[in-house]
Image 1 (cartoon, helix red, strand yellow):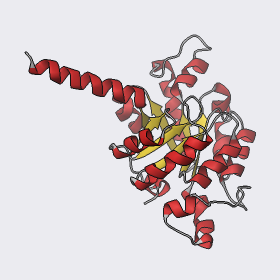
Image 2 (cartoon, one colour):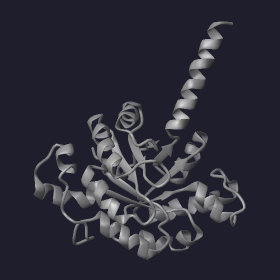
Image 3 (cartoon, one colour):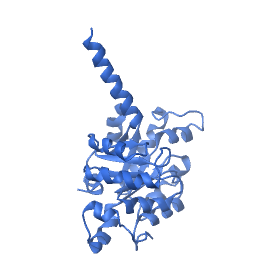
Length: 256
């Protein structure tokens, strides 16, 4: 099943988060037990070449490939899809116009203006049937608009109403900065939780998906209760730090 099919069926899925622009690292993440791997071009080190190369091992390991593009780089959304990504996350979608530009890059006509050229994506999915691809691509590729500012929250219903926007992705760190008027960065800020619950409720009511980046895994249950069903958890640095800590703890315990 595609990522879109699984999420629309109500499955709860987890994606790892990749900042290191290296195909071997992406392959190792894809071998872990996450459902998907997200390649971060906004704050991570990923670039066009690494996205092209990293999506292949993600696909061959049977995981879903997601790409977060840089702010405003809607042209990269189309390229990510042509490289084989199943979903694209666009940061700082703060207006209906931002959402329209994003959707236009993500969807073929008549929904959007995506140009034809899935020369990597089709063989990576194991198909050469261009007509079948055209008929299914708009349904099977997901456009997630990041909601992380007060402006985005105010424009949320309009953003959700844009044809071709499949869901929202909450960035809690930036949202906490906006929510607190720049006084703090705290992705677990209690004061903003009601607003986050409102975001997922409005997305669900609009028939759209809702995803969120989770800094504290202990909050996943709470966010799932709100209605989110795609969770990004951790990154390579955190996975290595936790793994090293656990290994050293076991080694030291064996000497006691």
